[in-house]
Amino acid sequence: MMFPSLFQIFSGLDFAFLLLRGREFDLIKSKVNFSSLGLWHVLFFSTFISILAKLTILKIAFINPLPSRLIIATIPLMIIELCLFTMFVFYLIKFLNKGNYFFNFIISFLWLVSLQSLLVFLISLLLWFFPSIALIVGIIGAVISIQILIVQFKLGRQLLNVGAMMAGGIVLGNVIIGILVGLLDQFAFSLVSG
Image 1: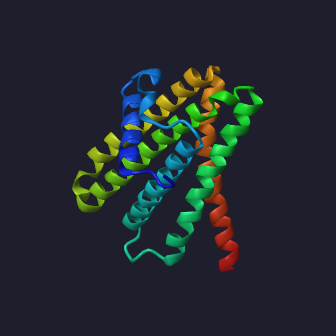
Image 2: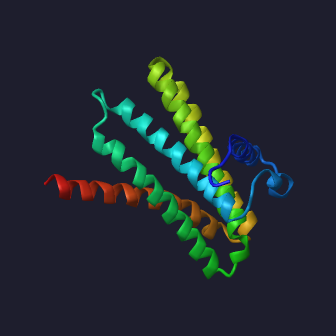
């Protein structure tokens, strides 16, 4: 099926949650499709939930309605960000001669990104509707996000069999790509707006 079913989405999120809880990859890998179709499914869902999370955060930040430019720009930016990271990992893994680990790693990593984006979306909704609990929700969200980064780091070490520097570089690469795409968006907007 071209688009992921609800079962595939819940199974992927359950897979990511189990990774977050410390379950071994080999024990839970049957929950997710590790192929080009599985990659498409996780990219599709991750893009969708990341767009929702970002738009919710922007809605909280703006008192007035969101400018249409922000809404329209968010969609291609999320697609570009996730595809750039996927290509970064593909070529890095190919350079390391570990190409046969690509699908296992990138799909697992992106399901963790999806889980993190879903949590950001849910936390943003809580903050939007219940601003009085912002501190508690913010602390819980930060702890879970840090834990996801740690699991992504461990996943790189385990699935790619690389050192701490390389695994940390992959996680940092994801963050840097996100920052660069955001900066390019701001630069392009400043050129267009004069």
